[in-house]
Amino acid sequence: MVEKKTIESSRGTICYFKTAHVSGRPTVIFLHGLSANHTTWLNIMEKIAANGYNAIAPDIRGHGESDMAKERSRYRLEIFSNDIELIVKNEGLEKFVLVGYSFGGGIAIDYTIKHPSRVFGLVLVSVNYVSPLLYKNLGFLNPVVYWVLRIFASLLKWQKRKSYYTYDHASSAGYWHSTWIGLNTMPVSVNFWMLAETLKFDFRKSISKITAPALIVRSKFDPFLSMEEAEDMARAMRQGKVVISAHPNHFIASQSQKELYKIIAKFMENL
View 1 (spheres, rainbow, N blue to C red):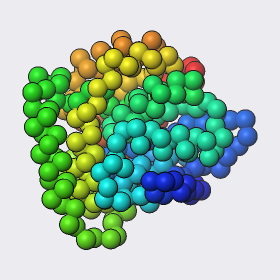
View 2: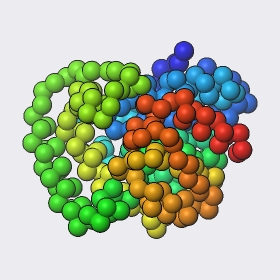
View 3: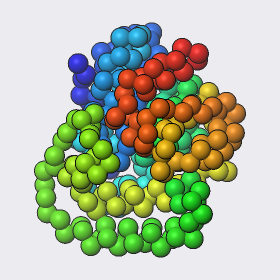
View 4: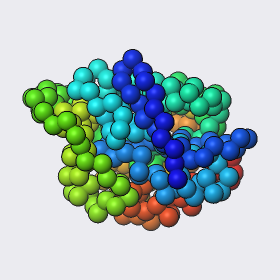
């Protein structure tokens, strides 16, 4: 069982979920991907808790039970990182392990760069550290795609829907199923704003500030994260390492949870 907690910030409500706290245990914070919610991590959180850790998983703003206001200024990378810091302060944490999946991994990188002394272990699952287009030699399309997404987001702000479908992300049945269900869990304009934000990711000059042990988990055939990028990312960090998942696509955290738990648990044993 997990406990639900909320924080009222100047930019809306942030909701997060935590396992029963045990004093003296290290804590792991899990960040989900775009169009998902904290349920991505529930199974792994339970196993991690049984293995001697406290676990926390927020609904990233725009998702689940957190703020979904249709204000573009609320969906910038620095805002997401600040939300994590609000949770950290609310829980009185000094050091913890940070695990980020896909979009959540971008937040994890940004947070760790800004707060390197807080994170003593970093796990990045299916995570890009630059725009996904750059390693495909399509960087010239970055500004075009960015503005197309921004325009679509603005056009879709008229959407009047007030309630959204919440689902267990672990039940995802593939890319298109996950995408379709995901579009029903949050305002489409917010989804497009966040997609546009990924095109602004570029940590090449700052990722070397991450000094903690870092594990990059890539699937065999991830269409978004190339092996070249994963290896470049690992080399850019002081203690970076790449592990290859047997899972065939991008959705390791939702579709290969047993394997991912073993990877994370082994990493944390050596911290």
